[in-house]
Image (cartoon, rainbow, N blue to C red):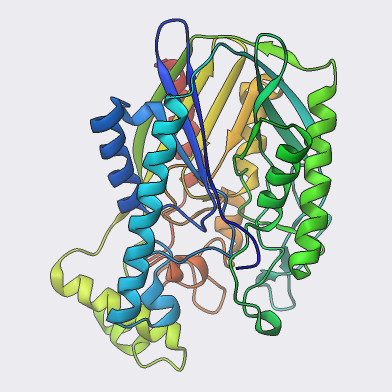
Length: 415
């Protein structure tokens, strides 16, 4: 282990006695099963309903693999013995999250909240248009990104920091496991930033609520030393913004909503096509095709992707929108524009991560985040990129962005 992985929790209770709990976990994703298990146990033990609990994966790529979601059989071809280790890891994480929820609820004290914003600039668009028309990984500084660092500060009535929640839209991929033989756990820049904030604000808990980082990578990358540099830079931005007089008070009540929508998939390829792909020279394609054939035989091949959406509104002062999935940065930019940038805070990777959630523009362009490449076409011959690794039979259908944004607006109107 090159760095400690943490579960951190913040419990809030407003004057009406409504309790909300945010938990962040240093894992790549939170799976659907894990989310459901934690939510059920939190309701049973603490009487927290689904909309009261917000789970956020920090999305470190140097964390434990889990038995579903970013499918370990498609990705690595794991056998039954290795899969048991992943199930054990999921069980351990579930217990730790539930314990953290209980400890946070048991430590409720009078507090005041304030909100501010900082900036960070190491998150860079990674989609590069290559000769031939495909979009691939790289560094595209001219591409869309979001330097915004929203910060919620929780203090005692006397002004002593108790918690700092901060967001940045950037993948935790400064460290690339496997490069130069590095295979260790590490929370990447997000964990470094949290520990630095806690060091500089003794007694406070620092919680990283991952931004909409779908197509944004840290630049430069470069292993643990570079993760430490990015983390300290982000911590400095959080501390500086937290000390400014520009912070404004945030009040209650904290109104919460939760809804799950379905995102339609493109038409499923034919059985004959999957039989053909099961003989592909790519081991990933072989394993994906065999899994799709098994789902066809069992009658369980999905036609849509479930996507949880959650909102917390702090009086009329602040709206927190939490989107499931590896949400592309375009969603945060659009929601801030439509809802008011000064009072809107958008996070991704919330509650569960079924796949990438591309913007309409990215879905049309193709590439890893969209789940199709020009050599395959958008859906009909079979999934590629992220859609393949997440185990779906085809990319998302057109209209995804408006469906998600429309659902957020609908949820806020129902508040």
